[in-house]
Length: 131
Image (cartoon, rainbow, N blue to C red; front, side):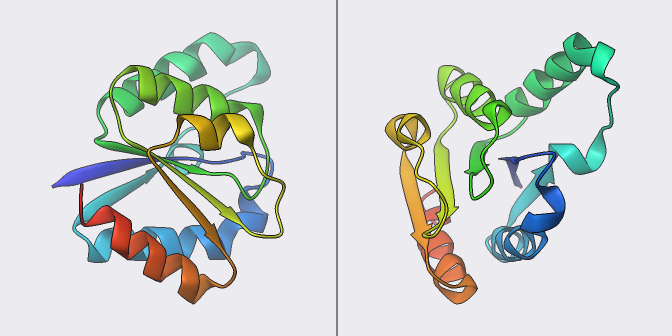
């Protein structure tokens, strides 16, 4: 079974709960296991090297990287860039009301700009079938 690494804002995790639920449910329905890094690991500020080593390991073990960018965070771009450098397809997702990231959009293989959660689920379903 394939695995998708979800790069999200740690600080904005609670605000993204509904969006992540739709993404995870859609991935699962498409036989892709979602992996939300911030839900599996907690690091102290002085453990930044260990955090990034673990993140890179998890990205390498994944088949797809999803950059959920409705909440901006520098880490999302770093994770997406690493995934792209490792040959992983990158899917950029953001709510239409959220600020656009030209760098994330520019390196992504697919882009989903959604208006509603139904719109998100439909667009993501249409994309993941090719992976």
